[in-house]
Every structure is written in C-alpha cells, then in structure tokens.
Amino acid sequence: MMPFWTMTLGRLIFAEGHIVVPYRNIATLAGGLVIPLMVGLLIRRLFPRVADCLAKALKPLAGIFICVIVVFGIYANLYMFQLLDTMVLLSATCLVLLGYAFGGVAAALMRQSWPDALTIAVETGIQNTGIAIFILRVTLEQPEADINTVVPVAVAIMTPVPLFILWVLQKCVLSRFGICVVKNAEEKICPVACIEEGHQQHNSASVEKLLPNNNDMPVNWQFSTLNNVTTVQPKIRIDEIRGRRVAIFDKEHKRQQALIPRLEKIEVIYEGLNDEKITLIMNKGVSTPYNCAQHINEQLLKRSVVAEVNGEIWDMHRAIPTDCTLKLLHMKPEDLHQATLVNKAFWRSCSFLLGAVVESAFQDEISVCLHSFPPANVRSGSFVYDIQLNLNDWVPSQNDLRQIAASFQKFVRQDHIFQRLDVDSSVALKMFEDNAFKTEQIPHIATKSSTGRSITVYRVGDHIDISRGPMIASSSLVGRCSIAAIHKLNSKLYRFQGVALPSEIHINHFAFGILESRARKLARSNT
Image (cartoon, rainbow, N blue to C red; front, side, top):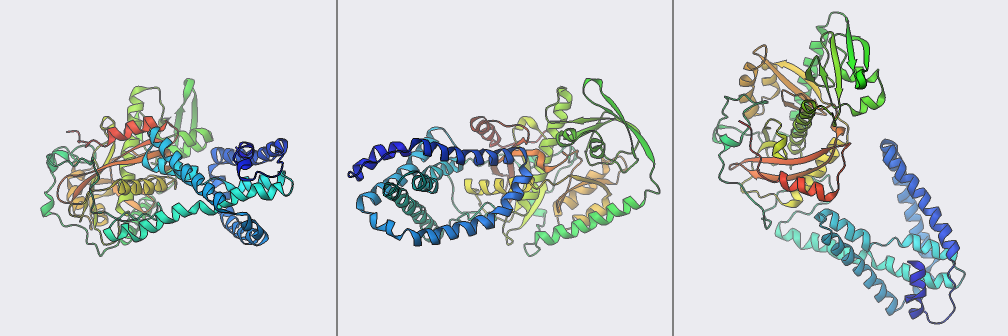
C-alpha cells in the first residue's frame, strides 16, 4: 500500500518535488520482515512451550526497547512535527477512524463473535506505523524520506485518541451506572444488574427434574430442597478450603502408598494398531497406563486420553493392580464404542474443570457452593455444573460468560493432570465438611460402591471434587472452549453450561458458533 499511497494521496498533499519509489528496496526490506515473522509463527506452532519461554524472557526487554525508541525517537525527530499541518492531521484522523469502522463492519458481516469483531476492528484501526516509518526512512533518499514519513507519524499520534476516549467513557461513565469494566481476562467476574436483550431464562422446570441422578449420583437419590441447605459462609476463603482439602488428600495418598509392602512385578501387554503387541514389565499397584506409554513412544504419550485395562475404561494416571492387556485411546478412535467412552470421559472432565474454575472465579464476598454435575451426555451439546450462589436475581451478561471462559482456557493450559484417589466415606466427609451438598450426597454415593463405603475423588491442581470417573489424562487435552449459558434453576441454584473441543480438533468460527448455539439450550439430565 505504500507505493499506492505515495503515488496518489502523497502527490495531492505534497505537490512539489519529484518522488521516486524504490520498489526493489521496499521488497527487500519487506522480505526481511516476513521471514522472522514466519520463524516466530513456526516456533509458536511447533514448539509452544519454547515460544512461551521466549515470550516471558523477551517481554521486559521489549518494554525497555520501546521506551528507548520513543524517548530518543521523539528527541531526534522534533523537526518532524513542524511538517504537520491541518490537512495531514485530518487525513490521519480519518484513516484511523475508517480503519476501526471498516474492520468492525467487515467482521460483523462475516458473522464474527463480538470479541473477535472488536479485535479485528482494533487491529485494523491500529496500523503498524513503525514498519511504515522504518521502511520509508531506509529506502527513500532525503528529503523525500522525511516528507513521506510525516503521515505515518501523524497516524501514530492520532491512533490511540479514539481508544483513550472509549477508555475514559468506560471508567468515568459506565461505572456510575454499576456496570463492571473488565481490565483483563484474569479479573474476577462481577455480576451486573442488567438484562441483555434476547436472554432466555428457564423458570418452569423443577429442581428435582433437572438435577443429576445417575452416574456420579445414585438414580434413586433425591436431593434436599435448597431451603434446607446451609451454604458456605462467605467469610471462608476458597483458598483456605482448598488448602485443607489438599492436605487431607495428600495425607490419605501417603497412607495408601505406605500400605504397599514391597514392589511386585506385573505383565502388561499393550495392544496397538495393526495387531501390534508389546509386553511391558511394570510395578503392581504403582505403575499407570501413563507410565506404560512413556516406555513406548512420545507421540502415543501425548495423544492418549484414557486407557482400556482388560476391557475396562481406565484413567491414565490410575495404578494398574494386576496383569492385564492395555489399550491407549485417543480422541479419534475408529471403534464406535471406544469413541463413545472417550467422549464421555472428555465431557465429564470438562464439567469437573468448570467447577474448579467457577469456584474461584467470583469475588470473595460471594458464596460459591458446588452442588454436582450431571453424568456426561454428549447429545445435550454441553458440559454442565450446578452451583449455588448467594446472588438474588442475577442475570449473567455476555461479559460474565466471556470472563469465565477466559479463566477456563487459562486453567486448562496449565497442563494439570487428573489424580484419582479412592477414599473411605469418613475421609470424604471430612474433606467436604464445608459443603452441605457434598456431605449429604456422600453416604448415598458410598452405598453404590463395591465396598459400600468407598468414594472416588479427583484432584486437579488444588481443586478436589467427587466423581466416579474416569477422567482424561490432562487438562491440556482440552482445546477451544466457550461458556454458552448460565440458567437459573431456582432462587440461588444456577446451571453453568459450556462447550469445548479436544486440543487436536480444530474447526472454523462458523461451525463452532453452531455448537455454541446448541449448548445454550437448557441441558436436562438423563433419568
């Protein structure tokens, strides 16, 4: 666009002088910029962890570098401001505003989501004036270089003005009406007293029909009405509750490990593709399918979601108790039955992770009490968690949903493993003594176990919850996600619903939008 600008509008503003465009120099420098960018994209694509480390290391250096450029650049080019006149500033302002408007309208016509449309508008309006100035100053001779650099400098000056005005509007005007302004994706969500147009709220279904009653919860178990349940006191911080649960979990895990008198060897026969069989000698009650995958190959280790031990679906980090045949399942199995089991494990794990995120997403004065999550039902189109909040008449906004989704995405990228532990019901009651729902559910769940007293809990990071499992190997196996809806079941109980894709499956925005639309419908539990 720079030759086009120089040969058209440039000649209208600066009529005097003959400007020769050095196309070869511009092409050479453009290539010098594209190659490093391509290298950076390849590193991000192929080695994401290396890219994250480089980003952390270079961020402070980049900040210092930018400050030095700004200070010395302004000082060395003070004469440039003398070339600015009304026509140049007006042209620069129009270019910026048209960029914002064109990007936003184009994104809206392409049916992009609001966050994506806003991003496209800002990225279009904020032209990369630094590259333009650099190329013009290096490729053109003087005084043409200074003359042509005036407009990119003017654009750079005018670009932040509209964004600054919007920022002042948000901070000074919207806050007066009680509307919460998001500072970043990590900020805790703040319920706002506004109802968005088109929001559908479910009022007719009863709590008893909507709450889960199989898989993770017994079929014949009916929960108490919420009027008889005491919520978690707001004064107790969630980090204190989690710290106590983790301490109990670690103590019980160490106790169980100490019961293993000595290591015994077992024979694990891995059955892979094309009738491949590998015999592994592992440690009884200690080695897991994940450990077996470590002995086979790295690609299998990364792709494996759950395992199949002697025909039973099995957690990747669950110890193997006896000689067995082992299959490692990924997110795209050819066998229909295996695909169903893998999908249910993925959906169940997403519900678990949703509870972990929401429990710590609200401000400290808001009481959050996890109720339960229904069994995995892929046909419902969403993963679900029912949560009690001490909020009256809260209607979640799209901003609230986006903030929870951002926290969810950040949490899963931390590569937490799902650690399983079977404990006695008395230990589980002690672990969840602060949660009235869980303490009421535990005795009934225990009666359905093989021993009549066992409860299965999972730990992800510092979050612990009840589930029969199995779960996926790691949170990093969850890719793109969205919190589609939050439905109010009664005065304080809310059903959080989300949709997610495995990290190895990618679809376009339009297709994912269809999944989001489906996931907004109130999910009902299987009976």
